[in-house]
Image (spheres, rainbow, N blue to C red):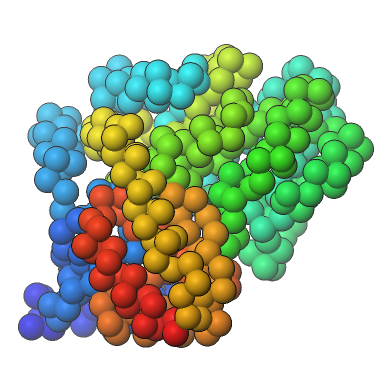
Length: 393
Ligand SMILES: *Cc1c(COP(=O)(O)O)cnc(C)c1O
């Protein structure tokens, strides 16, 4: 059966009624279990995209569903005028597991970054002077689609026709310590904002040396480190947050995607220097800290144990071992279950061929991007790897 509601053709109605901001794959996902998805015709796929690093435990995960529905049955929203337990619990867990001091909740990655940007400007202006509003971000970065986060995004292609961009963002090449040092010393800067593993920019990790330089300059010039872990956070790299691989302590961490595991939530975490920047009235979000989303996120964090994260690393090592040197694969980069393949064939061609064979892949720039649900099994990975090898060869 094509559609459950005989009155609607999903693909046609989508094209008629939904703004054409997305180029969709010709597949309608209707159900699934973990990393296995099913389309409207009953065809099964191994999911190597997790709804863009969102579905940490895949789909139809019973534990997460009960956490969410239990809260749904109690109270779905209170507004931030009242106390609410799930979001307090979530903030406490995040602080205890990261050493950060306070958390602001919103509904998306862009909003989590907006909150970080406003906080950095407030810090610069009050601590250093009114001209210290500049934030250094990296070329090839991605920080969101709102105007400020788009301005922060170091990819001119996303800016076209949406100008003027919000002033106060300076883009510097990733992994170029000298250029960073020059930009920091020649401008009035309040923060450096970065993804430790660039996602949309082509799945590239920053070098340890560059990250150490960011930390050194941040200390020297009293500049905040804003760590955008919207995509690479929440266990994706094999640690709870990616900064834990780099020996730094960010002043602000933003996250979203995988912490929500399918429900919209953004979180901006503040360290020692930044914990008290926000005072009543300075920032807000109507849905922020929503108890249903928070209940789901609490379940996600409780299950991202050291043991589980070690497994994420093992799965990553397995993929890397299997695909390194495979025919048609030029390189493999990234960390944990956030990997990018450089291939001989066009990445879009590979994604289409894999889809035909029941494996859903994504792209990032010229790469094939692998960001499966963290719960994917070795058997499922084995199937996906077999197909990836076939279509890349
Ligand atoms: C996806 C993403 C964002 C934007 O998140 P939204 O929830 O789409 O607003 C910001 N930063 C990074 C690194 C991302 O991958």
